[in-house]
Length: 128
Image (cartoon, rainbow, N blue to C red):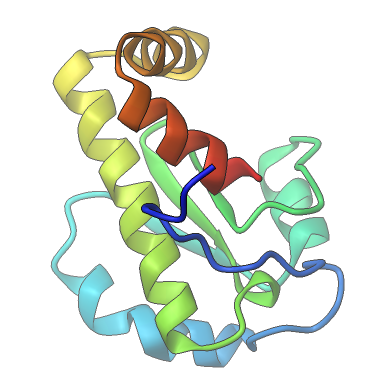
């Protein structure tokens, strides 16, 4: 698989990565101008408690019910946190364009990826 769509190496978010305060500071300016609510959780356990979800231990964040959720401990630095924020904000925009949420949104993304090999490759690299 090519590295046309680079993805930061994942670390185990259970281990302390970038701090909650560091993540908040790194994203504060960008979040201020967004129409999408952004929740920053210190780690996977806190995000699971807040949402009631069983979250993948390797997750950097997720988009749920119109809100972006970030996992501070998953980031190595401010740039990593900002990159991941824009990834989820893009999902929010795509969801609004498609008019879908939840499983219907996931199915729509799967359909798009099945029709476009470049998008499929980028998604596969992102999830690797």
